Image 1: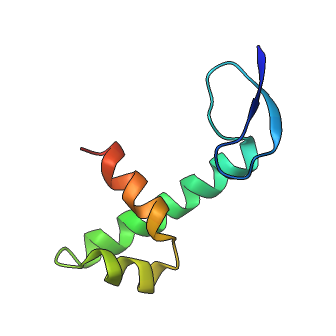
Image 2: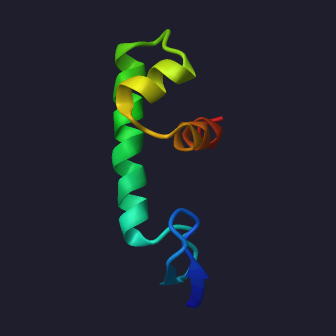
Length: 69
């Protein structure tokens, strides 16, 4: 176990391999579900459409896209 800074909020937390603290990891999970549901319902949506309709930040949406490539 080591001390690390959360890549999302910067708080210090104890980790073994996580990059985000628990609250930020839970928020990312919720946001990823919002994005996935919207994209499933609107397969031709652009990045900006997803951003405007879900309220999820562009940075997070891009991270989710990169993680699924």
